[in-house]
Length: 378
Image (cartoon, rainbow, N blue to C red; front, side, top):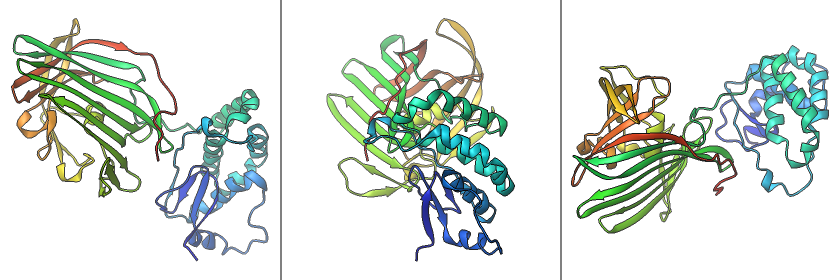
């Protein structure tokens, strides 16, 4: 008999590696330990509430307990919904004393998460009372939904001018393009585009990244490049929960790091971490382990004039000693980040084959918000 079994709901118990949206995974050893008590009736509730009570009674015996977010895919519904959120919320409310007696905080968290994840198209007819009851339940139980790990608003668009010495040689943009769904996980779509060149040299590079909205881990990375008349494309699907990545066109699965980031994701992630002048940081988060660590040296503070105003900036030197691109060791890159809570990238300087190019912020804008199912692939 296996050491775990499946029952309806959404979480992981006692260290199980992966789960499926809408299910509870638990180890049988945890259930056995909970049943050792001389109890005439283990569960006192029925139906949907019994799942929440089960979690509450098993949680004290679990080595670890995790929730796994899952994005609802309304476009995939093939049948009328069997979820009745209003009725189930009422049942949960009536059962709250029983569940609280077992383990209130844990159980009611999954009531809220379970309803949010499993309500689909047909249940929208009850949306007004359900939403009200859901909000009341969250408020009364002091449960706050987990914040998004990616704090940047959809539509944020940063436009840069590229200069080679005194010459304007192109443009670049950084954009939070939208929210998609990658293998059932909500993912923020990030785009970094460079288009320019000088004399005989021309480059068009489009880096696209999809990172988990709630964990800031790369799920997909695409590098489309045209340089010196040659073009190529590399596509990577990254599976952080399973610990590997695959490159399109190759059958081999390669091990990745625990919290992987790609080139484009790193440009955004570095805006979220504490940086102290004079410190040197090493991050083993690049999705290709052999290219770690990514090293970031915080050099100094400066006042810079870009986008029509003066900014207080932090100057950092990012580099990937074993990698290539704009952060390669030989590129000797510099980044200027605004010294405030937004950490906007004000400028980026890097060496190309023909010389040093500096990107300077020209404008901060916004594009039309795009939220949808996106490029869903297995």
